[in-house]
Every structure is written in C-alpha cells, then in structure tokens.
Length: 247
Image (cartoon, rainbow, N blue to C red; front, side, top):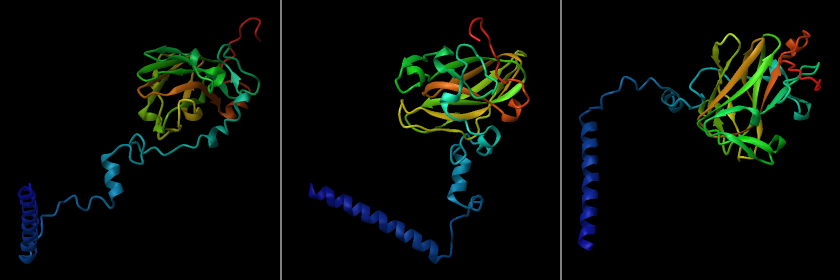
C-alpha cells in the first residue's frame, strides 16, 4: 500500500518538474506563446460575460434600458382604490386603475384556480407553467394602458425567462409586448407583489391579452392603468361593460 502511495507522489513531482522545465526553456529562448487576436477585444471580464451570456446584467439580452413607468403613469396607488372590472368591466368617472382577478381568465394547459389565503379574494391562478392565460378587455376607444401583474414566485426571475405576452384587438393583428428588463421578485408562493410589466395598445371593442407561461408563478390579478393625460380628455380607457341592474 505504501509503495503505491510513493509511486503516485513520484509521478506528481515529475509532472510538476517537467512543466517547470518547459516554461523555463521558453523564457530562456525568448519565445512567447502566440497571441490571440481577440485578446484585446474585452476590456474586462464583465465585457466577456456580457457577450457570451444573455442574462448577464442585460436581462433578455436586449439593449433596452429599464423603464420607470411611474414617470408616465404615476404611482399605482392602493389596491382598495382600484376599479374591480372582473365581472362588469366597468369604470368610474376618475378612470383609475382597473383590476381583473386571474381566476376569471381563460386557461389552457395545466393552470387552474386554487385556494390561497394570501391572494386577493382568497384565490389565485396556480400551476401556470406551460400554460396560456387569456383576458378579455372591452375598450370604448383606442388607447394605451399599462399592464400590471400581481404574482408570487419563490425567487426572483427576469419576466422574459418566465413568460411572454401578446395582445390583439378587433382588427385581429397580434402584437407582442416588449418586456425589456422587467424583473419579477418574490420569496414564496404566497409572497404576492405587483409588477408593472409593459404597455398594451387597446382598440375600440373587444381585446384579448394572452400570457404564455413557461415558468411557474402564482397569478393573483392583472391591472390596467390608463395614462393620466388620457383620463383628462373625458373619455374612458377601459370600457364600461354595463349590465342591466348593476349600474
């Protein structure tokens, strides 16, 4: 047993000695290893990572900067000030933020409503991985609104690593929302946080907003926030879908 150990030690020493002699011979002869033409391409290790890893500091690899939606839409405000448009798709004269509960959406795939005391109304839409979640919104006029999603995740992820969003109106043209570098944060399946996702261009009449998910999250509700300057024009952004006896 001792003989085998000494043999291993001797082999290791000889290997190190050979490497040292080779390196010394290169220096003594004034030779240098050939220089890679790309050696000066990167000024830092971070530059190297940015080129070869899409999610390094750049989210989905795009050059689009983070967007501060509050500059354009203002603060989202408290949830108890939202207009619940889950059933009526209604609005009030202030045309504030509209809320649609996730469990009212049309789902394909494995997503389904589930009980969750931490969610609005005690329910959320769960098991969303490999699913599509579609919401119908009726608009009285062509307008732009900010889409928000209140969701829970076990750990933070880039939105573009979890889902993509398309929307279409009466003209039938489907558009894909730009997610930029939006990051979804959270620490558990009950840690619901609202996130401003991006803009949707609503058309007069029936619109469909579809979330195609390939990363799991619990969705509590979505919000649609009209631009303040549009609200001041006196026309609503999200339709009043009035039902007899309700309004």
